[in-house]
Image (cartoon, rainbow, N blue to C red):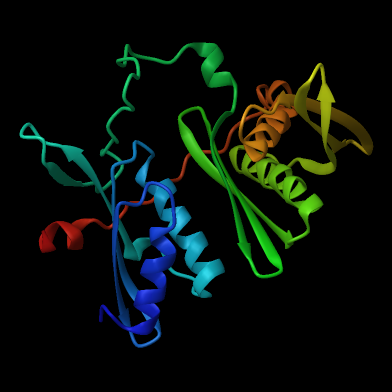
Length: 256
């Protein structure tokens, strides 16, 4: 039922997420059974679903199955009013970001060789912090998570750890990666994030380093610095076979 205490708490938590323009949660007792989200974002719905799962787990203390979440994109209709467009299945594609280039076929080969940054979230829940990093490689999105104590100096290390976890989700063969250090330094009056990783292979340790200038978002710079350390190495590694799931949007479409 909507309006139950757990549904109200869940809706309040989900509304705090970026890209969420509307939400409705239905609960049966203490169990959340349906979540419907409306968004005007150009992000893939599966990424929004993962955000919903993460915030419910950390803020409400409830773990949900992704299949109970439906996402609908709201777009501008010809008359200027919003039209809700439910998305279901892998064939649905989000509308392009304003100003984005029109599709011209295959992406350049060099773009496919490098892992791309999508999003990073730091979710603080009491004394614990969760870092969630979303990446894309060869057209496929993957998410990495890392959690730890809510110490100020540990947050960026968690971001780097979550980045390495997301990278490993792309790879067919496991890679032993460890975050040795994350440092912010001043170079020529600019703040720079420096990430030091260690790679264990064939009983030998190889040190990898990457850096990125901090423009506005420090966690994003840490993700990009971690990728700078890894991209050349990862480009030659075999990727996992893609696995995807289908979002349940039928219930939302029926109600509207």
